[in-house]
Amino acid sequence: MTVVRVSNQVYGWLLFFPAAVMFFLFTHYPILATLKASFFSTPRGARPARFVGLENYRVMFDDPVFWKVLGNNFIFAAGTIPLSIGLALLMAVWVNGKLSGRSIVRTAYFTPTVLPMIAVANIWLFFYTPQIGLLDGLTGLLGFPSRNWLGEPSTVMSCLIVMTIWKEAGFFMIFYLAALQSISPELQDAGRIEGAGRWYFFRRVTWPLLMPTTVFILFNAVINAFKLVDHLFIMTKGGPNNASSLLLYYIYEVAFSFWDTAYASTLTMALLAVLAVLALSQFVYLERRTHYQ
Amino acid sequence: MISAKISHYLESFGAWLLALIWAGPLLYAAWAAFHPPAYIANFDLFAPLTLDNFRTAWNTAPFARYFLNSFAYVSMTLAGQFVLCTLAAFAFARFSFPGRDIAFMLVLVQLMIMPDQLIVKNYELMSRLNLVDTTTAISLPYMASAFGTFLLRQTFKQIPRELEEAARVEGAGWLRVLWKVYVPLGKPTYIAYGLVSVSHHWNNFLWPLVITNSVNTRPLTVGLAIFGAPESGVNFAIITAGTLIAVAPLLIAFLLFQRQFVQSFMRSGIK
Image (cartoon, rainbow over all chains, first blue to last red; front, top):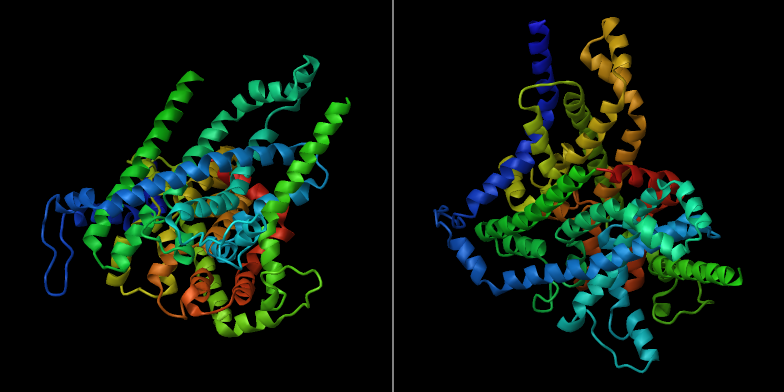
């Protein structure tokens, strides 16, 4: 009996082992190596890395670009998330209800999700092009002068936010749609018998039932906002004057344009800290919810 | 009653208007790609149709090569994920081994922190392994996937033990049980995960950008970024044509299997 159990334990580890090696190599080891590198200087040529303690962190806290891109990232999150979640909910309610041509509408909402961000950026770049772009065409009709939408610090972030909402809303819609379909139709019938209006029913029944989904989407959306940078490579390169740069893009620049790997590691630690805080708050929230149930 | 009808029409109108806005950019890109560059900024319903943009785009960048690279990278990643995640999920679902719960927590770390955020150290690791600019290097960091492991573990846990025991009584080894009982019953999960994985990696950009530096390994997204860069001097009609070439396989697949696609995303979202 014990022999069987021991061999089963070994068997379990053997099955997990190949994946474990990969998880360690490409996730856990890099995290630890990043942490270590953040306490050392960047090796240059013959000069090896030397221990500098918290020097890189001091540089980071004094780096105006770091604070700029971190702030941008929060603006980007705050700008994209509420609107894309709101639109996602609206879309889900619409395609879940009685709507003629429902599947066409649903396809239209979801299609941007399957496009690569690079392709989306290529297409939208044109809309924002001064003079010949669609946006200038529209504002021109209204008599406004031509603008360089992506070239001005005051407009560039809004342009990226609008595009991102377009890209992401359909994806969040899917989760709402799944949640809506799991709400039993009897509830709806009961509501109708009780004489509840649609809006009242939505506010009092549907919305509370959708709360877990909203939380799930919200956390994923926030975390995603700190990962999404593809469009910057095409549209702005983080410019003008870092007005559109985001944390991960800054890490890429520092590492692969300036080859300052130590500082890039320090910035990566900042990114991981943000992600860890978000992940933990999600965990704590979910724990608390399960206690209530 | 009348007001209910009006609000129904209003809502339908809103839904359709939003659908039009959402389909608009892609439809416009398609329109631009099929018309001469001169018509880019002034929309004219009777503008002459042309395939020249596609011809030029196809000849400007080695798209055939990019397709091949993307295909190699995506299928290699998926094959690795299926094998590694299946074995790991089976271990977590059906075996109790020392440190299992801690190991599982460590796996879940990757749901938050993907190799994309660890580009600096992963690049160094690849260059130490002499793998920079290879398809293997693009795939390797994603082969063990926390998401896939988690999804398959949930699926395997739901499979009744009796099915497994019947096979065990007949003398089947664990791998045989996995292969004959669990994998076939997990088929819907494999399909859903496969679709999500393929579309994610086909569209992936940052890591492939960092780790590739030649035409022989660059996937479509990276090729498209170079092709579409303003400094490459290509005009917009040709860029849209190139963009459509690049998104075509996934887009067509999506339009054909829309229902399955959407359902697989639904299923995969439940973490």
